[in-house]
Image 1 (cartoon, rainbow, N blue to C red):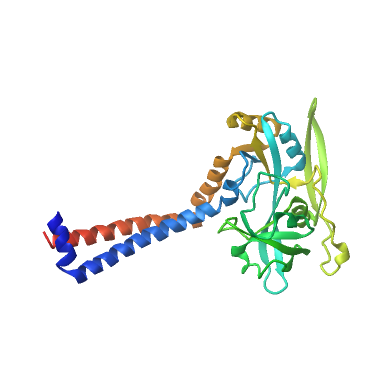
Image 2 (spheres, helix red, strand yellow):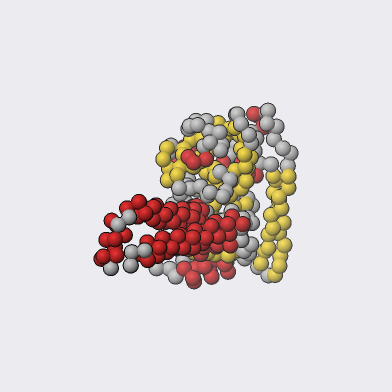
Length: 324
């Protein structure tokens, strides 16, 4: 074996260099393809895995992190009273249209969270301060999406759904590669951006004794006049009938999570409770299995591994067989 290795190294140096180049190409192909797949899937769950929540409560019709139906704010208060819950916080998500001073309109995803909470983090804040989001109509974005939003620096302004928006901070490790740019805001600001053009009313019926079933109906209201600043509303706290997207739950020390999930689902009809790991897995599987993008990247990674193995095998076989 030593003699064969020596012959491969010194008998034909040009051929040896070509073989090494082929092997490097094969290894690079495998690394790039698998890296693309892993980076893509990891980006879709950054906010989930970066949270401090033990359990995520969602609608029972939730498909993945960005595709679900709303809950109600009063369910947050109910969750806080469930046995085993140490802390519960709301997360609000919705779509918007970003209009910069110059450039094209872009779709965005608004994410509102409790600035005084402990369970959600908008990635790693690299510039600005979290408390700046307490000011009306302020947002943070991932710095990788500045070009997409035609932004240059903190202090730049635009409009979201005809309401003003001012950039007060930048984050990293927060943006999904396949999603519209995330705009992080306080619950009050996000609620105003998302629901200003809608009014809500609560319909309640008595299903049985001591069982009140309530449904919130949302109706389109008169659109804002984008040229009239006097119509811009002041951001207000969420009311009990306002929609939220998720309830993030921190369990008490020593609490069994499976039991807590059952308690939450029993207390909140029409919901499902997921551990952080389950929530991330559900979202990751959606993008890998149910979308064409996940299929293409997965196929590319598989083909890259196969081609790489074939190239390396053929190069080594040809090199060794010539010197036996």
